[in-house]
Image 1 (cartoon, each protein chain N blue to C red):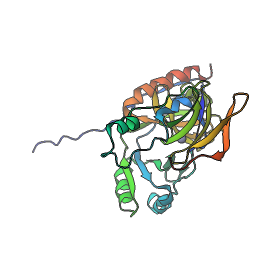
Image 2: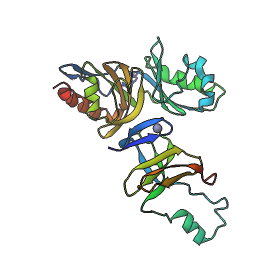
Image 3: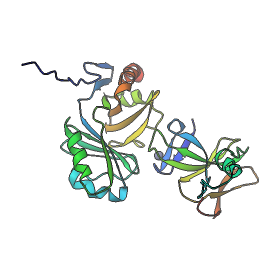
Image 4: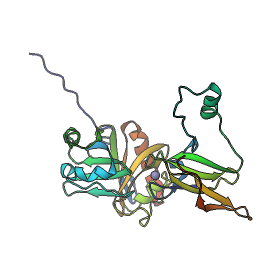
Length: 111
Length: 188
Ligand SMILES: [Zn+2]
């Protein structure tokens, strides 16, 4: 069984307590009533679904109940890192041997 | 004059007993319960009303000498359990007048609890709970919302060999049967 680190419980907990809740860092348009249908489609329906590293929201639904963000490799199913909801995207780097770790550099802001 | 019909509140597991070598599984006495949500930065302002300081660390609980417990469930969420069956309405009305934004819901009869005790208590829970329940990871006083078999429960370790399992009333038959079955294998 996978162990997932919950940033609110501050420890690794069994995956049975968690639920994946889709792609992370999707910004809701501020003027959602006025955007075009195409822009709404991109915001509402279209997701990246990459092979490899992905940023996801997870929820510790059978634990503390909190939503948080996670970086996961969809090929190996390994979690690179998890961090609290609302924090900026955590940058990660893949080393030559294929392993992935958190980069010292913090990317962008807000989202 | 006509007799007045009184609703009789019965405990869902009343009369059930189970156990095996080294484990007893018994329904806990009826209790008052409140689901409490409040910003953790304001939790301290409720101490005098509650008669205890809400625990702020994950997986911890506080128990008073009067039999009131506060269990940390999330960063802004606690489960209050009081030995008095009537505590729920008193607590919710007092909390709502605290001058702090709170959500306090009387869930006294939503939940029921099962006590699992004895040398095989930990092994009994481990048969259906994926968490590390060893004494180092889950010491006396530790509590957590988690999973037992197919249902969600709140587990509180009340002693080295004693646990309280809080579950929803409608799931209590499943929980009790599961634990009774698991008890038979615990020290086998
Ligand atoms: Zn958590």
